[in-house]
Length: 290
Image (cartoon, rainbow, N blue to C red; front, side, top):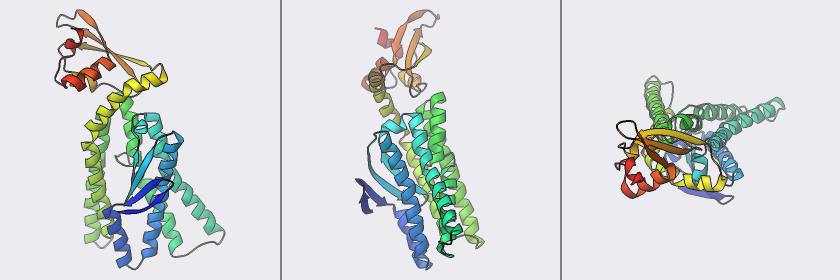
């Protein structure tokens, strides 16, 4: 549900967040729900400001119980160093807000009911988002770290699986806490939406990877030079098996040999990507030499 527009960015509330606000209203603590909304919104606006600092467009943001999802251009996702910066600024903002709240408390500008919740909310959002699990900020940093070593697609799958693990663990923990009277439904709702969001990230991995490959030539054209990454492959290997080894911010050259380990030629990443989009993942790389 769209609730407004800030600096050209559409602000949408996820149904899970609406349900969470409803729980706060039923419990008679809507003020705390509005604080949670503000904390999550400021967290996400920090991501947007960081993305725009790099000249990346952001069209809208959807607020979830544990944070939010910004529609940020792929320039950030496919650049590990930028993704780390944009991801880290969210939890950093919450820690800054926590420090500001502590300063207000020390100067007597404090509400004994809502003040502690404001501090708690910022700490929880910051700590939760630092988990190394997609789509959380820690998961994006973790993916950026892995992408340089095992490739973007594998890194996304691994970070998303951790998101599914933590989502399931939180649901189980929330269920046990609810049964024991130690927590409310909000913990379960948060876990369910983390599980859902992580599964969605995993399903989009192939789509993002193809976009990433298609953008590589633009990266080289824009930078003029990129570090090279040599690979050696049999000429019978499928294109789909080769591209799994491609990593961000590197331009790959593949040396081909036949079954007798004799040199056949060299093909570039650009040739492989073009052939992949034209012939499919099952085409042997040796065809590019004909």
